[in-house]
Length: 404
Image (cartoon, rainbow, N blue to C red; front, side, top):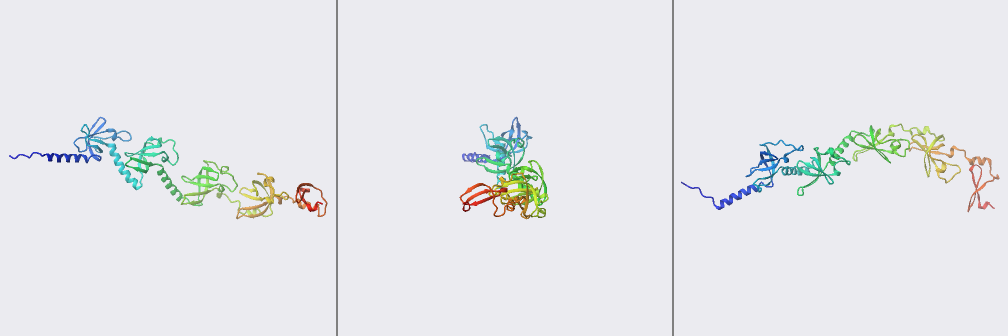
């Protein structure tokens, strides 16, 4: 009867190397295993090693803290060590989820795709986000387009994020929710702009008022209503005509598809007072208006809402020369003027204030022909002569050569 050969020392070494090699190949990998038992707070899992491993049940729980795991289910776990001091396999469900998440995240990050996650905690400077096992950092500035004072409604809610930066070696992931909102808003703006056309009349809500105009919300996109397009009437500030929150009817003047800027107008919905201005205000006509603005070169007089004419400083007085217009008229003062020139195309009307009054020089000439002797008060003495005040605010000059 033949006897079997006894294992040699080399055979034992080969078997040991094979066993160690097989076991070592498991470590640091995600493997599939079978749930063999549920013991209190642990799940017993067989992954094909000499001994089973135990994983805390909480690692299989969902966001609600519950799990429907049962014996016989197949699960993926990460093998930390093949055998610990108690002879058990060291397994981790959380680590398996993280590894799988990192693989998926790297693929989506490279492709520029969005990822889904849940904001679950607060940290200095921002928040923590669960990306199906991988934990990412959400900076406070990346939560929303505008500052958010209360993030509670956004927590524990599955939502999309954009991965801004990731480093697997350091375990760092930075995500943004703001970029998703900006992209969505840009898409909405593009869609809304494509539905609008120049000349179209729409309703909007005054969102903000500045010195140069107002921003009007057209239902997801803002348009600029410049102060010069609010009214034909002169207004110094938009708040004189509109208020924040007010609903206004506006016309789309211009659309710049490249910059996505929209220019709006309100006065364009009214009849243009300058139409037929040459007929309404013929040269030589005497009119009454209110002084609306005074400058160094003259004063503006409103003839009707939307139409102003300029009285140049040279046309303000027959006798007062080199005097600031504010010395002759005041704002809101009612004055009589004469139309001197009309240019409806350039929207300009030149007016004369002195022409609406009698010329004191004519009256003086009629009363005092050349050669008459008159009396007057010396008003000013200069190197070249004396200025004498005569009748009707008329000043005369006596040259130095004619004094003696």
